[in-house]
Image 1 (cartoon, rainbow, N blue to C red):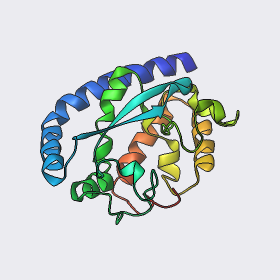
Image 2: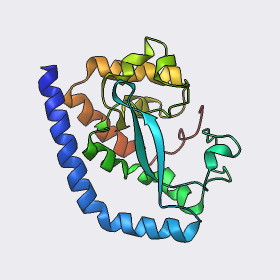
Image 3: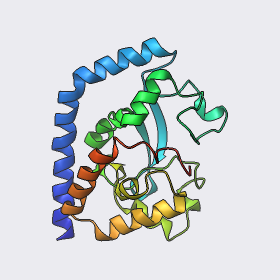
Image 4: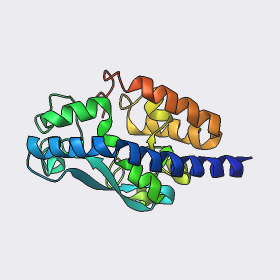
Length: 200
């Protein structure tokens, strides 16, 4: 049954990401122009992340911060929407989660899924896959997702290790219906930004 659920999941990912990219292409153009006019730098933000079985891949997002923001101020932490590194367009893109949409390309390429554990950067909260506790490595047994159980339950309002427990729960109890539930709740949660920055 799990193999069948995984097959359905991948087919859904391919169809959803393809349709999403086609339908959203006009919006992608509009957002790209806005980002370029708003601040210097590229339209997209590319960052190495840890994915399936600890493999590194390059995640794609709309750029929402000034260039080299990771090396300024709080680094990878964004504690408030008032963070001076966030651009004007970035505040809107982050609040609505529109900045995540280019990850549909990652989904189509097979690096990610629509639903799954969020992929951490390669150096935080642990430096490299090999330095993760054995219990936490289980979260990497499925492709990372644009959204996931941890985002639906706590978003960024809990420490990483606590979020990992939700990820592992998802991996152990995954089924297509759980994915549908998470997707539905994600659409509702997009309009709530109260837990977007807490606890990072």
